[in-house]
Amino acid sequence: MNTEQIEILLVEDNPNDAELAIRALKERNLANNLVWAKDGAEALDFIFAKGAYAHRSPNNHPKLILLDLRLPKVDGLEVLKKIKADERTKEIPVVVMTSSTEDKDIVESYKLGVNSFISKPVSFDEFVKMVSEVGLYWLLLNRPPVA
Image (tube, rainbow, N blue to C red; front, side, top):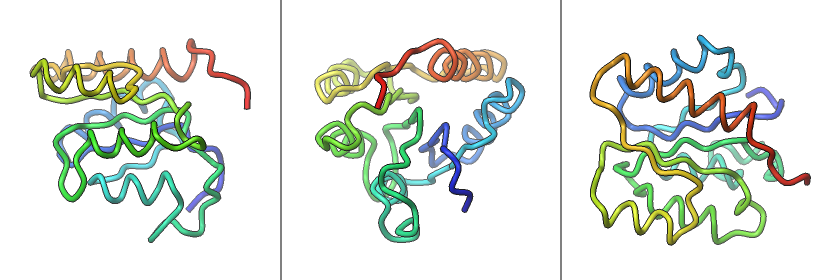
């Protein structure tokens, strides 16, 4: 695994949605240093440098986490809760990208500290456009706190 700064951690169990997101980000040259976690447990291992990712520096955080809510092993709300509860990771921007439009998921995500909540568009073109715009904003326009 490359030790360079990881720009995006994509946490998505649906391979079709993941491939579309990766393709949209690559088209804008935003996916050079992207890691795809296929479930919540893998995402937490990556973020906290455990398990298969124990060789990583726990201080080498992604610049952005794109997080689905409906995940196997550990659901997205639990992943969000653990990220935002830890002093080392709470400032990492987390954007929930989910098929859920339930108010309770939106409310709970914001209570836990999500930076943005986006419902995945159904159409291919709208999904690609949305992912591209999210990547551009969070990686190029947003100004994070200086470490």
